Figure 1 (cartoon, rainbow, N blue to C red):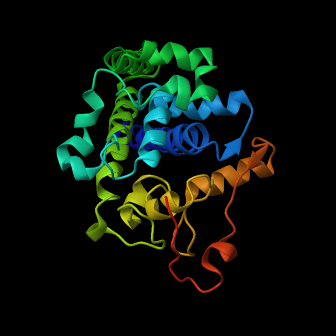
Figure 2 (spheres, rainbow, N blue to C red):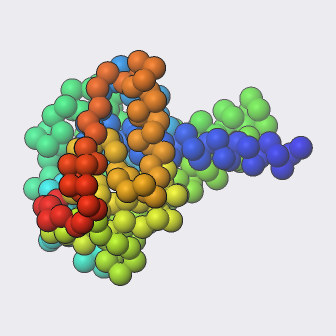
Length: 262
């Protein structure tokens, strides 16, 4: 019974935290690929935040910079700067470099008082420490209310999800590890097993070709649970609008690779 409780908690927590990153942080905040009520936004963003993704404003700003400078000198976490830097080294910078300014590049998020508070004035170290403190406090409350099986399952799920975007930053920008549907000007590739771990984010070349799309899996075999959930939320009225690229227009009906700038 203890093992079952732990495993169920781990699985459900992993799904919520991972979707919090993919739906909340990435497709909603970073790319604004759909619109929803604030309560829905906070539900998904909280899932990502409790997986130690740090400030949502910081995360979205860095990700927008990644798309602006993909696999070039100013890309915050390109493997071209070295695998160690791309995986985690960039995370420990004290603050934004001069060419990345959330006040300019994420004006839509700066307006939100909660995101401003979690941002901690642009001090990365303080923002990461606050995220760590809140995440651990959440698990302590689970321990006190529900016992160690649920607290431990939640803790390990959060720590696992924390590492997955770091992994994606590396693996999905090394050409030999995946394939391209689109001839983007960067090194982005689709990697099926990363897509499994990330609920659809591993179709990374597709995403760099069409970053504003709420859908990342375009081919029939490119399963994209995050998009399916966004589409379901749209069906039941929890999403007001979403942007979905037309698959027929993308592939022109023949599946051939297209030249698209990321």
